[in-house]
Every structure is written in structure tokens, then in C-alpha cells.
Image (cartoon, rainbow, N blue to C red; front, top):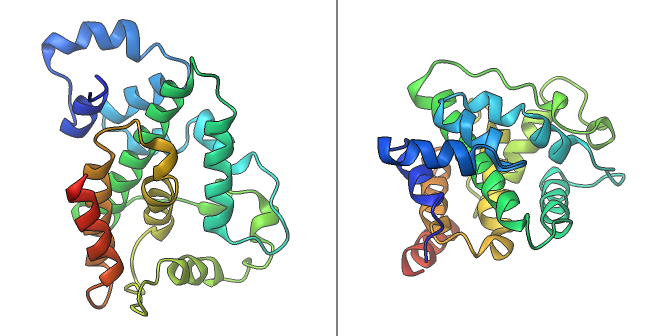
Length: 215
């Protein structure tokens, strides 16, 4: 059964008949409520810069030389595993809101506008970026992680961190979010955006798209 929060999030807006219930029961939830409120307000940057997300991304210790995607995956899994049975659904909804905001912001950065200014060092722990302080090195590292099947990402792509974070949430951590029935739809959105910034077609993304369609 599709969780009642998922369809409005995918739709992108609340119907008048849903607004009262959401205000009383969803927007008031501790973890996901503020993120979903910002998401429906169209303030995607507020989702990324919320206290919950800043703590999720920047609140952990980083091992020396740890890859950015490995660190993000570890933080997301710890966030989920640290939840009780009662608040697990709330945290899953928070991560869904974050993934949706990342995809919206990435599309806004590269196609629809207006420009989005995301300063990645403000989001991640300094220890994770000690070897990436020279100009351009952080962007190069992010683009390298997003390389698939030997196909490079367009070098002038805007805010690649947003695409990477969406991939960590929707692909790397998907097994821990399997109660989200519409997760494959969001995965397809990620696949579409990632493919558009690669130089050639990616068999990995094709396989991911096919498996998402079959779910």
C-alpha cells in the first residue's frame, strides 16, 4: 500500500481536501514535517539547509581519505538505524523530501533556473574535505564519483553534489527505504537527470531504469 504522504509529494502539491489533514498530522511531525512544508512551498533550498539535514550531512566524523559518497551513505544509514519503530516512517519521509528537493534543485541549476548557489563545504564536515581545498578539486572529485561506465559528466554541470546526494538516497540506500512504494518513480527521475549530463548512454543507468520500472 502506498504511504499517504507519497502521492502528494510525487504530485508536487496538496489538494484542498488534503490540506487540513497534512497541517494537523504531517507538517507537525518532528523530522519530516518541516522538510515537507518547505518542499510544498517550493523552497527547496530550505530543505537542504534545514537543521535536520545539516546535522545529517555535517554531524558525523569522517575517516581519513573516506570518499564523499561512502560518507553520505554511512550517515544516511546511521540516521535510519538510529530511529525507533515509531519514528522510522517519519525519518523515511524526511529522506524522501530531501531526495525530491535535491532533484528539483539540480534541474533548476542546470535547465530551468533561477541559479542555485550551494556551498558544499558548509554542508560537510571539514575533515572530509581536507584534501579538496584547492580551487576546483572538490568539483572534480564530485564529477569523478558521478562517472559511470567510463562516461564523464559534462564538466560545467551545476551543483553536482545535489545529483550525488540524490543517488546516495535513492540508489545506494534504497534497500533501507523499501517501505516507500513510490521510490522507483523518484529513482527514474534521478536516472533521467544523470543520463542527461553524461556524454554517452550508460548501461548502468539503463539497467537501473529497467529494474525500477519492473518494481
